[in-house]
Image 1: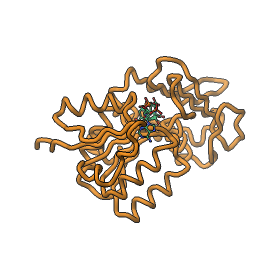
Image 2 (image 1 turned 45 degrees about the vertical axis):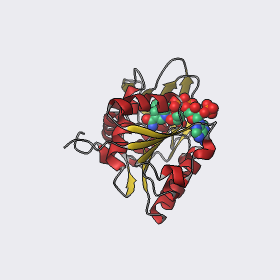
Image 3 (image 1 turned 90 degrees about the horizontal axis):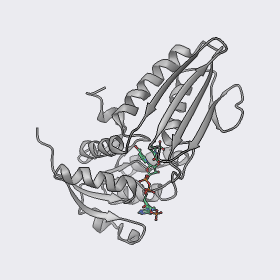
Length: 245
Ligand SMILES: NC(=O)C1=CN([C@@H]2O[C@H](COP(=O)(O)OP(=O)(O)OC[C@H]3O[C@@H](n4cnc5c(N)ncnc54)[C@H](OP(=O)(O)O)[C@@H]3O)[C@@H](O)[C@H]2O)C=CC1
Ligand SMILES: O=C(O)C1=N[C@H](C(=O)O)C[C@H](O)C1
């Protein structure tokens, strides 16, 4: 079946917004509304209602308000901004109450979503191997505003869900026994590298995902928009990729 050509609102026109625009136009979609910091006042219900779907990639401070504006306008929204995890449950409740559509992913690339599945399985396998210290390391470019990355937080949440002895994580500090140690490094031009390490005095087990560019994130975000534009509810990349992985 051929893909419906979408009228897209791009909220945020930085590295990700621009990468998504290129891919969207190549697939025959139309960017009807482009919101930057300079025309943020144009993010109105009237303008959003000219579109089929919004794709939001801004920053931790703007994301929540932008998502709510889309929900209030009745427009499905795909959000890739990270760093607002503390508001996630409240935003989902807002979306549910307003019968809106939201698809948030800390990472849209197929590779990372496969990596997530490996991480969950490895965490379950290692749950009783207390001789191994588990830790997460992420490396990103120096323009990144949040730390740790949203992807690193997702990896930690998956580990916590698959063992009983870890309850939270700590960044760049010595962890308590019930915490996962996280390290965030900022090195240009890294688009995003994530390590999950299990280390013991006898041996180490390590899984690594390395993004070579932003193409995987942009492709995944556009696929998510094509998935959600005519749906109601709260979705994840697992819903989008359920027939693929
Ligand atoms: N989920 C995923 O797969 C991925 C998520 N990300 C996340 O996406 C977000 C954006 O990343 P990236 O594109 O690299 O960042 P950029 O800084 O390159 O782009 C963000 C853009 O949004 C603009 N902006 C800020 N506030 C608003 C607003 N209220 N309305 C409209 N535009 C606004 C910024 O302007 P100004 O610079 O003037 O503030 C900037 O141009 C980050 O949170 C990042 O962590 C990134 C890659 C993949
Ligand atoms: O800011 C970025 O660049 C990225 N952010 C996301 C995150 O915080 O996990 C995804 C990817 O790693 C790139």
